[in-house]
Amino acid sequence: MAEPLLRVQDLKVHFPVMKGVLLKKQVGTVHAVDGVSFALDRGETLGLVGESGCGKSTTGLAVLRMQDVTAGSIEFEGQDITHHDKAQMRPIRQRLQMVYQDPYGSLNPRMKVKDIIGEPLVVHGLAPNPAAYDDRIAELMRTVGLLPDMADRYPHEFSGGQRQRIGIARALALEPSLIICDEPVSALDVSIQAQVVNVLQELQERLGLAYLFIAHDLSVVRHLSHRVAVMYLGRIVEIADRDALYKAPLHPYTQALLSAVPVADPVVERSRQRIVVQGEVPSALHPPSGCRFHTRCPMAMNQCKTEDPALKDMGQGRSVACHLH
Image (cartoon, rainbow, N blue to C red; front, side):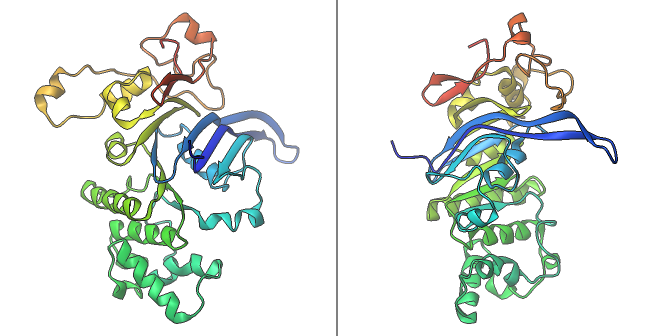
């Protein structure tokens, strides 16, 4: 078996809750990410899904080392980067990039598009002369479906979908092997979402990119991902091949998420079993004992209230954390 491109093992990201003005003391801990493990192969897309606040984006930021890690390990291209500082991460960032959620806030409104896309080239000293710089910018813009003669425009002169393409071009500038996509289409209209997703797929096929695709829209994740990991309150509760997960979800939370996705066929929609999850997501400051989903799970047993289920290997690349299996 080939070594995975990215391996995350028992990742934990905790935030202290402080009280007081002058004499601050810690009064609690937010368990944003609490024991997440997964692997990602070259050229593969792993979808990371779950409700808002479950720790998806924090996991992505930790992988990028833009967020300090409390415990666990992150290996990228066979190298342990868990505790790398900024200087150590600098050469690695060429192969590890990010596309942000907000196509408006992630671009500097005072910079021209050519300078936004070309900034990574300047920072890493990969622009030997102005002619080579301009050629590379033009190439990157064509790659994401933008006209090179738009290079002297500012971000406000572009639509939301075009701005996200600019963000993708910037991420591609350093020829990375892995791109973290943090809800890259959630701020866009549905028709524009499809265009951006198609661009990402075409780039993956052409360049052999791997994606960690963070999203809450399960239909987008199904279209793009090879495997899907489902997060709930800082933990992965199920991870499986895309088709297997959507056809027969094992965890009650995954079943509830998928039952909420509308189906275009009205006959199928009326006959579907609808699983309604009651209540709100518990606070990551005071997570429930035992299984974290037991307070909302329609199938909860007494065992679920006291015993925390481990993520068990079910075979054929599927794992689930549930006492029912």
